[in-house]
Length: 255
Image (cartoon, one colour):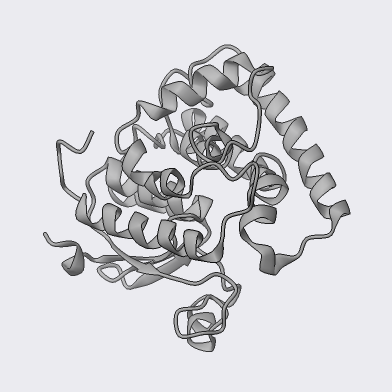
């Protein structure tokens, strides 16, 4: 089935971390979807603050998923990841047994005031100048991320290969899109040398199916540690990432 005929429409942009987690899941599972590019924070025609989009999703957040087959729409990346795993029986990534999924849920529920702060502390101040975060806000985000990264090192990844055990799960996808974006290979915004378990996990995650395609927008954006990228570079990273993602659906030899 052609992506344009898919029952799934995903609203977002490839440089958005939560959107990228959903893209990665869908590409990994070869599930067709149509990606509709959005402009975060804008009231324009494709903006997340446009009145028409706010009617569908009052918080104006991305990702936003429409399942035309089921006749429903859903926001928030973790809710979308869980929904897709349940809909398509992807129990390898989110087990149906609650005793096995409990650790995944534990991580996902703690993510937004922890690892998610990687974006608020490092990525957004360089890429989303429109947000104009005060220094005190950024400092708090850095502290939250630092504590959470230490927990990732000494607890979540101390005795297992992945966050919820020896098999990858949607918890790893959610965490990696935040932590991994800071690697030297991408934006080069954080030094992971003091975190050997995290470094090992980051390497393991690059071997997961469809990693490179899902993250190609970051590869295009490149190292932003010395200078914030120009708006044109950000736009190009999103557009070229979009083209690669859409053109590589169902390419079984993609990685």
